[in-house]
Amino acid sequence: TSAPAAAPAAHGCVGSGLLSRIAPSPSRSGTVPARPGSGARTRAGAAQAMVMMADPKPHELPLWRTLQAHAGQGRPHLKDMLSDVPRCINMFREVDGVVLDFSRQLMTQETQRLLMELAHQSQLEKKIEAMFQGDRINISENRAVLHTALRMAKDQSLVVDGQDVVKDVHAVLDQVKMFSEKIRSGELRGATGKKLTQVVAIGIGGSFLGPAFVHTALETERSAQQAAAGRTLRFLANVDPEDVSRALSGLNAETTLFVVISKTFTTAETMLNARTTRAWLKIQLGDAPEVISKHMVAVSTSLEKVSAFGIAQENTFGFWDWVGGRYSVASAVGVLPLALQYGYDMVESFLTGMRSIDEHFRSAPLHNNLPVLMGLISVWNHTFLGHHVNAILPYDQALSKFPAHIQQVSMESNGKGVFLDGSPVPFSTGEIIFGEPGTNGQHSFYQLIHQGRVVPVDFIGVCVGQQPIYLPGEPVSNHDELMSNFFAQADALAYGKTPQEVLASEPGLPAELVNHKVFSGNRPSLSILLPRLEAYQVGQLLALYEHRVAVQGFIWGIDSFDQWGVELGKQLATKMRREISDIRRDGRDVSAMGKDSFNYSTTRLL
Ligand code: F6P
Image (tube, rainbow, N blue to C red):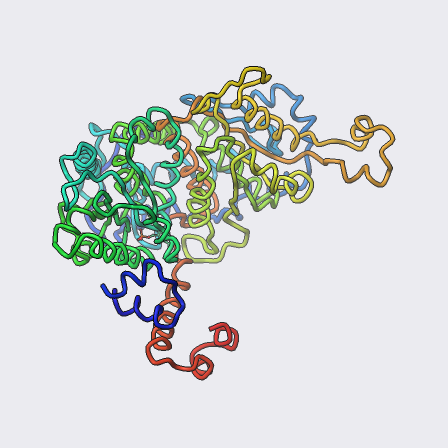
């Protein structure tokens, strides 16, 4: 670590902070069949691929053209569709406490029927089953997609390639349980004998966003708060040294445990942050071997790389290549830091909540299946109506990191340009996700979604908030105030306000101002209501959206489980790193090297 850290300091690019101190130093089909036992592409693998590779392609299905024509025909204004009660009844579902109301979508009952037909013609049920049973549906990487196995109960079994993966999953969960209990009780302590009460989880992308979302969601939940008393959990994701500085700020190394989380254990950001914190530990606590063995553990699929880094096998928590990074929160990636912070029981309820939605997704008929409905709705909005953005707006501060997590789950999964067979997709896939909690967003970007572009919105609300506040003299509780906005916004988008209504509310308003105050309405949203927000519901919500993304990808006929699009930038960064290192080392003139290596712009910027 010393060479690259020393160089920036010499060039005066880095302040006196951390680096300069470091420098010197059960299913619809009923059964779960066994899979054939080879990692290579087998004939069975080819058969699995046939289920996934829709032939004809989605846009060649008769239903596709029917839906295009149907979208072009238009439909009544939402204010009229919302007064059609039978329609609204048909667009309301409740599953294990989770309510989904999609009556404010730009859909008639005929649209709903056609989308169901599209699901059938796309062989959606078979594709869902192929995922659950461990087929290699991630075709471009020839991998199974089995994050659902992470949530299966101990007494269940799923044999893939001759191996009961549920057994493997629970062996790691048992390891997490035992380790977290020992850390929390103080049976395992730091190198100087102090209790390890502070945890820093180091990881990025799927090795960060999911665990950080769940942590934020539980932080103000009362039983979780009690379980976490006296403990802290922080995350270090960005390679930016400012993030290192923030993550370490005020920490006592004697009481700090670092959890290095990386599926590959090669991700540049995570590895540099791991080396940086390892160096920090040594500066703070000395060079003795127990400094690393007692203050650093790892979560990875690459046990050899973890061991090469210097973390012992007994301090390593494994997972498997059939868990995609962005779907890994239910593996040790999320479970370990969360169990350390909140105790293992909390983790179990989170996993049970996920399992409830997994089982529903696998077994419920498509027309009553929440993730299927949500996936079809988003395909309708995106592909047929041309609304490419989806705002996720939780009316619950505890869900503040949910949009960012789903942004990765959705955009890394479905931002693809080719079908599973590699041929180009002639329609757009992959919604653009953004979001903030209400009511904050109302004072920020809602202007655009009310009077600018049409942005389909997901409103997420909770019936009973985590922290009740009732002020004497106030007309409603603070949470009821929040939820008043939740209900109001959905109707504001749907109904809008006509010029007549504007004038009725402001008689005598100058004519040139009227249109500024008109709202077209007819803007789609769906509403999700959870009874409360405890670990169980956090798990349900997450599984709901994970499966929604899978449904979109199954309908679009793409591989939602690879992410080749992140590779090119990584390769170019490697080249840049080499060049910058040369410039630093040799004190070379940047402009002199630009001709051969970089274009004018990069040379100039360098
Ligand atoms: O670059 C994207 C990505 O590969 C994500 O898919 C993944 O979650 C993240 O990087 C981190 O990867 P790893 O867990 O291997 O460090």
